[in-house]
Length: 146
Image (cartoon, rainbow, N blue to C red):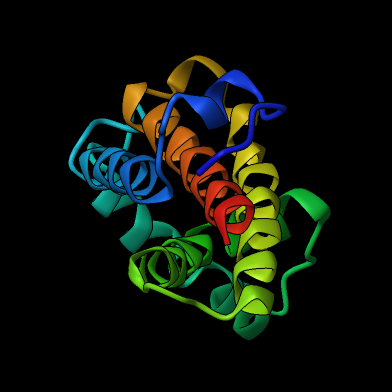
């Protein structure tokens, strides 16, 4: 139980599981929502971007910071899977939780590279980005309550 010195969110009874389920639900919705003017759904964007870094390596293309982040971006979805597994466990290893929390925050920063697309982005992209932040928040709640 949260102590009396805890902030209002801690006293509200919001659990890591609740925030995690909402974050994962948002993530799932984003996969089937429009994310870009030229790529209809998040799933299609994942399939389009996934081979990015491998394609650049094979073609010996110059890798810039932006192209590297764009190529890394679809792989941040694996962090969501790890986060969900850890959040559903009763007593996950604290070290794994901490690393996953940091990786989720890093994922938000990496995935923000797509802001360069500007007005081509659709609401599914923003849902996808928010889902990482929600899961990072859930991890922080889980760590606080451990």
